[in-house]
Amino acid sequence: MTGLTLKNVTKSFKEGDSTVDALKNVSLTVEPGDFIAIIGPSGSGKSTLLSIAGALLQPSTGKVLVNGTNIGEMKETELSSFRLTDIGFILQTANLIPYLNVLDQLLLVRRMKGKVAPKDMEFARTLLNDLGLGQKLGKFPNELSGGERQRVAIARAFVNNSNIILADEPTASLDSNRAFEVVKQIRKEVKDRNKAAIMVTHDERMLEFCDKIYRMEDGVLTLEA
Image 1 (tube, rainbow, N blue to C red):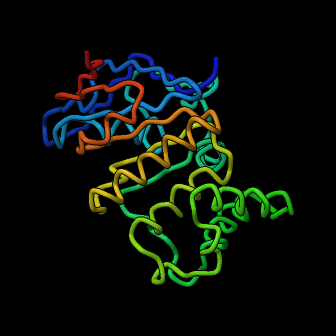
Image 2 (cartoon, rainbow, N blue to C red):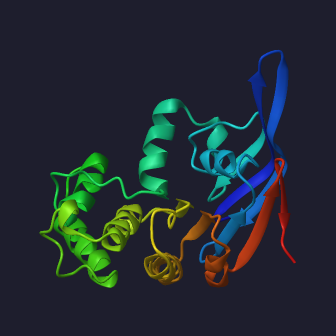
């Protein structure tokens, strides 16, 4: 089994004397090459689902499988390595390091995994070229537009060749033109590199680029018709 699978996942939180179910028996499968969207109101459980899929939170009940491996059975040290190597995160803001140039933003991620080999440098350059940043390798974040910074963040998410890509409101800080550009680039990389990807978004204009659309309401996930 490849890709990402959530099986009957429930996540409960304590609020005072009561218990709140942020996720209620959620099941979802995302196969390699799938780019799916999750929409729904604030507080409906979307970010909780993404955090569990990315091994940042553990479910109260249920299983999360990545390429057939139950990540709930991993030790914390294994989870840290897993998050670095198997999950690529794209967040609302690029969160680039101000004193690193574009190429070094990606190489830092590689260094966290181990020694940077020539093939790693080549792959980082290829990713940046594919995202239209080939002329920006030596530029620093303050020398880039908002759309360019977010494209660097996309490249960073893919640089470890992670199996799973999780995007949390990746267009929230962008204008319409840049938002369309960024989502098209995410889709292209997902398809070209055969990754399983989930995008949480409030911007329903971006849904045309997704293969499936799910709606989250009060912790319940349903497939849109």
